[in-house]
Every structure is written in C-alpha cells, then in structure tokens.
Length: 172
Image (tube, rainbow, N blue to C red; front, side, top):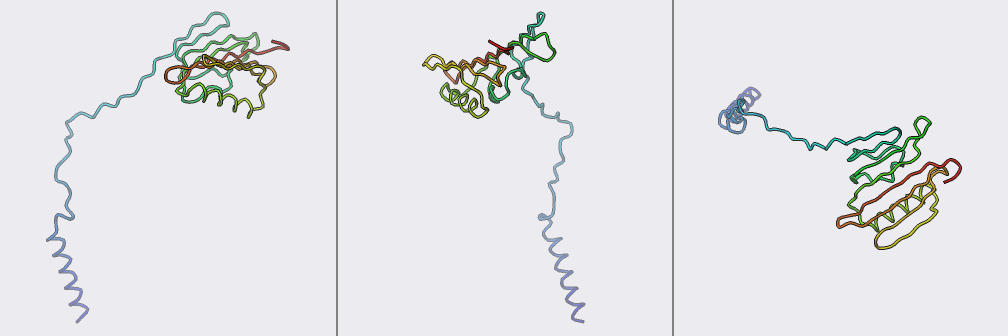
C-alpha cells in the first residue's frame, strides 16, 4: 500500500507543479509577423576589373589578384592591387615581363623586412639593394631565370609597392 500511496502523492505533486507553474513551460504567445518583408542583405560589390589587351600585352586595372607570373608570396594577402601588366612570350603559358603595383597598410620598414625575409627563406639572391627615406629598391634573382625588381615607397597610411618581373633567357 505504501508503494501506491507514494506514487499517488508523487503524481499529484507533479500535476500540481505542471498546472500551478504554467509560466515555466509556456512559450511566447506572440506569433511572428509573416507579412513583414525580410531584411535586405547587402554585399560589398567590388568594381569589375578593366582589362585592356593589345597583341601580347595585357593591362588590368583594379584586378582581384596579382598575375600568376609574380611569385604569390610577393604580394601580401591584405594588399589592394591597383593594376598589373603582362607581356606574353611566344611560347604558351610564359610571360616575358610583368608589372604589379599594389597598396598595403604596412609601413615601408615592415615591407623591407618582409621582402628581405622572403628572399632569404626561399633561397633567392639579392643582386642589388638601395635604401633611402623616399624609396627602397631590391633587384632579386628568382630561380635563376627570373629577375624581380621591388620598389617600396612610403605613403601616409602604409606603402605602395611596385614589382617588375622579367624572364631571362640566358641574360638580362
């Protein structure tokens, strides 16, 4: 008998808790407004690049990324590429020359250290370097068949970097 009375008491306590504390288990009675319009999601639209081609020369203003002929690490990820040019060679998938101009938020001294570290870590050879307050210039031998000139100019908020790559065929 004690088992039944205990279960009856427990059942009545649970019923009392459920009925007495409806606010604990109730949901918000306000229905969503289905007639209101959804909020408009806006995307930042990038300007489309302007591409100019003449024979083997290609010029691109405001491209999304640097050309593939420039080593990928030489243009930092957070930089804004202003324009690039490529001069194709007679052979397929080969460029004679490429120029990239980009803006970065990093100061000139930081970019100097970045390129010096990058050049030494990849085993490239610095042929010539000049540093002054107005600009820094590096002439680099990349993989013994490309010459890369790097020019760094200080700006008010960061620096502007110009990369010029020329493929050599036995000489520069």
